[in-house]
Length: 60
Image (cartoon, helix red, strand yellow):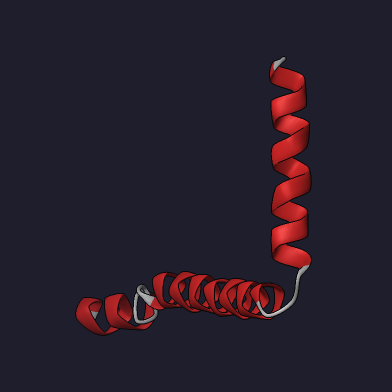
C-alpha cells in the first residue's frame, strides 16, 4: 500500500527537468533564428560596428 501511494505522489518527478530542457531548446532556436536573420541583413555589421565604436570611445 505504501509503495502504491509513493508511486502516485512521485510519478512526475522528472517532469520539471524536461520542461526546463524544452524551454532552453526553444530559447536557443529563437536565438539562432534571430542571428541567422540579422546576419542575412546589414543590421549585424552595423550594430556591431556601432557598439564597438561606443566601447572604444568610452575606453579613451
